[in-house]
Image (cartoon, protein in one colour):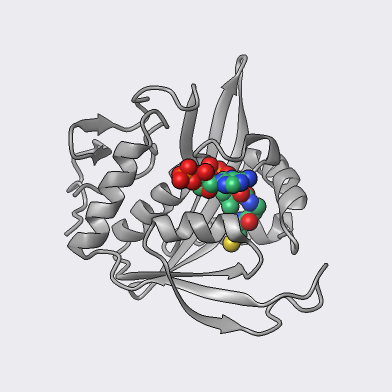
Length: 213
Ligand SMILES: CC(C)(COP(=O)(O)OP(=O)(O)OC[C@H]1O[C@@H](n2cnc3c(N)ncnc32)[C@H](O)[C@@H]1OP(=O)(O)O)[C@@H](O)C(=O)NCCC(=O)NCCS
């Protein structure tokens, strides 16, 4: 079972091999990548990415209202240190209510895709969901979005259903499939997450995740 870190004030992820302190880099897939809580100041860049990748981009006000619901939401950004200033290259969010998690957002800037940043973000969101007591996590994904579905399958998401014309009225018409990890806190799921932590060789440890297995 995942456990909270008991208020020790030390945020760690424990992989199979080692204990990794928050913010550490293990070895570099992406040098200087860090994941941390989404802040107001991140929003201009988040909105830029949102407009570039989403068929139905959220507006600033919607992000702000989601970010304000701290008891039930966690919004995280991936930042890369470019020169002296960190640049936001991706972000995601998860909502947890009464043990049910829902991934509400996941996006990586086009120029930064396919470098394991989406995997690192989803790992972080999963940790955040577990920390908030999620027993299952669900999301919707456009049926044509093969890359995202592949990513979710790596995390143990299974197709549980389909929403017809879920995206109707937007830039295109498309069904959504519903994908769920039914028992995200079960040993088999936690073992999968541990494996993903190990496989991320080099992506920064999420700064805000304090789950360990
Ligand atoms: C889906 C998304 C978040 C994935 O982020 P990412 O940083 O590119 O993902 P990762 O690099 O962690 O890749 C995940 C897997 O997909 C594969 N993949 C990523 N981009 C790929 C591409 N263009 N072609 C083929 N495979 C690809 C990777 O190889 C990786 O598999 P592996 O771990 O076995 O190597 C990103 O593509 C994105 O922002 N898409 C637009 C927004 C979106 O669709 N969000 C999801 C809404 S439900």
